[in-house]
Image (cartoon, rainbow, N blue to C red; front, side, top):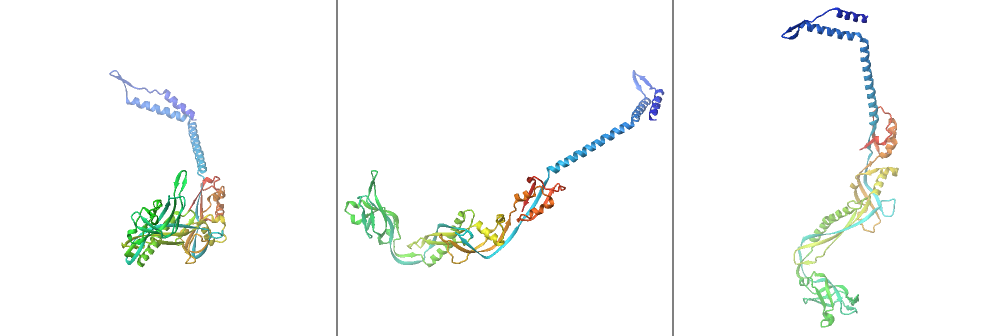
Amino acid sequence: MKKNMSKIILEDLKFKKITKKIIIKDNKKEINDEDIKIDKYISKIKKRERIQSFPEIKEKKRGLSKSLSLLFIFMFSLGIMFWASEYFYNASIHITKRNENLILKDKKFILSGDDESKINFEVMIVTGEEKKNIELSEKENVSIKAKGEVVFYNEFATTSQKLLAGTFLVDENGKTYKTDNTVIIPGYKIVNGKKVLGEVSTPITSFLAGESYNGSPKKFYISEFKGMDKYSKIYANLKSPLVGGISGEAYKIGSVNEDNLKIFANSTLKNVLEKKLKAEIPEGYIYYQGASSFSYNTDTIGYSKDPKASVLLSGSLTAILIEEKDLKNNLIKLFSVDIKDKEINQIDITNIKDLKFNFYESDQLVHKEINNVEFLLNGNVNLLWNPDISFLKSKLVNLKKIDANSVFLLDPGVSHASLSVFPPWKKLLPEDKDKIKITID
């Protein structure tokens, strides 16, 4: 039917004569408007003829192309989604650590150096000195001789020379002293062709009292050898200066000064020693304030003409250092008697150094030979578990999501856990450990 219609139209066009009117003006062709309209009309008819000649074929081609495009897009999208789901496949687990509080009220512990069941410890001793300027106020009349020390030399003979206590010596300035002890000066020796002098030291005291004997004479001679050859060959040199000589009214350290020195020693000097101790504590040990004994002595200045004096104080701090691991284990077992060693290794006590220490016996002294000590601890400590991430991952690999809680229950350090898996439709956790991310707080 459609084919016949096309023929009719073509025939009409064929036998219908349409002519264009061409006008020549000034040697130029001009086509009038009516001719242009006829050309446009003929073009439209021919175009419609081509479309109507094969309408079913045109529509079928357009429909097939669109369906294939949609199918391709769908399959491509599906592939992308599958690739993305495998590439980004992961499990995220957030764990809250277990945290417990332990309160100690005068809890008694025992330190022992020879019993493995008790807490191990070490004794550490530090020493130091500090000077204290003081103002002397007490006076009295005194007569005190200067004291020092000399070394005797014998280059006179290879035989020894004996000097009795009280032997008179004279220095280069003519001042006289006496030896405090009996001494024997060895004779000299010849070693590799060289003379090696015999020598011996002894303290000496000035013959008279007074400040004039204080000082450092270079050489001393034995008075009884004067006029003999050995006077210049058996002699003494000063080893330590002569000090302390004084006569007349002089100042001395009084009770007020002694009290001030005691306060200074137990505050300033002791604090200096404790700082020194803390800087030298070996790793793995704890020092508690009060777990020590402190002692000091003063440099005896005797008497002084000047009320202003400087006193040197020497101190010693003997301290007990407790092994942190042993103490921690004892505290954990207080929390739970039946706790296993594996779990103990998972637990930290973050504030163990904040506990207050006291000796069980208030007059307890610490010395280097001490072997057993009883002490008390007071305060609160936090027990913080550390879950075993490696263990948890090994149990969670390729596990069903619904079974994850049973794994968290295996670790006593897990207080709470939340799990999320991407993509959400996955029912199993990843097979790769690296795709299981665990965060802990």
